[in-house]
Image 1 (cartoon, rainbow, N blue to C red):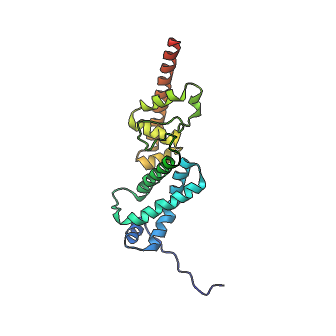
Image 2: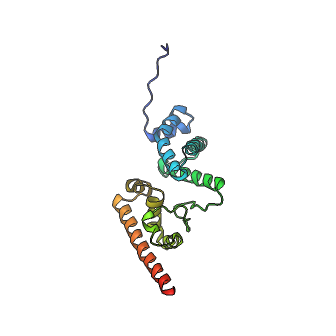
Image 3: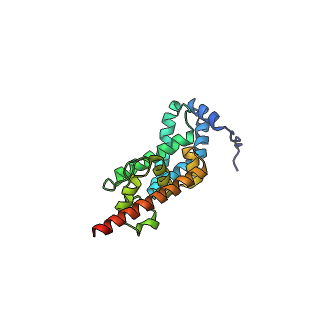
Length: 196
């Protein structure tokens, strides 16, 4: 049995922990890691589909946070900043690991690779390339929420929190995107049938 008495862990608010971590308090940084590491890991795992790589990249994201915490001004939430860093780290990893595969490197990307598209309900209707072309024609905001929901697998409540909209808005935009895609794909299919 240990003769050392364990110190009770300090309970921080996030803003207190950020301020303390900026002043070099390692316990505060550990608190921030505990608060956000699971979410960062899940974001990266969704993209990489590899637990080992996701664990490594999660550590890299927090090393980056450790080095740059002094520059964090609090203009956005720390979770939002970490989410963006996690996405960027995952996409950079994919680019380095599989340069032959085209990947979208942001949720606002102008092009989407068929390799990333995962909505199997539409794949039998038309060629994947037609789907990609149809997605490109969606309005940017609508396209972004659609990609977050269908391609990256976020739930509507997660999208609402990350984007700063309501759950109803997320559901509505994804529904509108699906409706527009169906109309565009039917038009493409009708055009192809007329040519044949």
